[in-house]
Image (tube, rainbow, N blue to C red; front, side):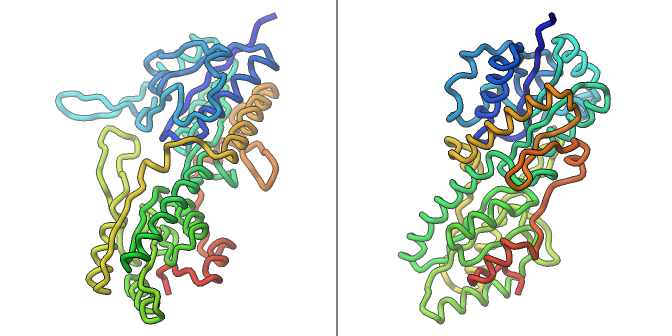
Length: 363
């Protein structure tokens, strides 16, 4: 009887919990199904360039608490758009044939892709071209369609909340406005959850464009009431009503070229001039991606990883494992490609925050 074989890759940005997922997938494959496990290096880049190795039980033992990924990753690699220089110009070539050839050469029964919407959208295209694929949602941004939550999100919120708690003490001591900028791309999930958890006075998210006058009014009101400090958490994709996002840099050789960032400093300069209150900005940035995963993320990663192997056994290819309420569900990869999942401006969490006096800068 032929022994089964799977391959695993991790694409996109790193986040706490990836190794816990790799461990769960590989352990179940080895222990329960007696399958060989192949680890592909650096996401889709490893598929294009045939960089992979067999993972032993020892390779995936004792990594549940490790952040990052033992396989490496890339948020630039896309087999359908590989950046190359021709005649001094940067162009993108379709190398998907080479990537698919690598999968065939490995002789695997299924490719398990761990990643965000970009990685999983690519896996959907591979699935349509005949590759047996199962997806696992991974992002600190929590913005993948078809699932209520992604692993890595809870850890990022924990780190952001701890940072906001620390900022509060210095804000109080110096009577300052303190702004903390967090990741999230075009979705405000991290800012919203960390803002509520830390008791931030003002939360600014991409889905609710702010008005600078409304923020100034809130800070001024607090000062008149004897509260001489204000803590603001702002998502990197937040923008003023009628304005545009703040772009930190352009990465020309990346599939997603625009890198957001810097809105905290823009906002800080505006508020200091308008309120005459000393204002400081802290950008948490990649701190949110590092450190050990929270117990919640370790458990979630284990559930998603083992459930992904169930999809493999059922030959449920072209699907991603997701979370709906307390249940693990099967989600078509086609659903992920429809775009990111955003915060609804009138959803329960936003209404909850407003009910305890949190300002979103829009009124």
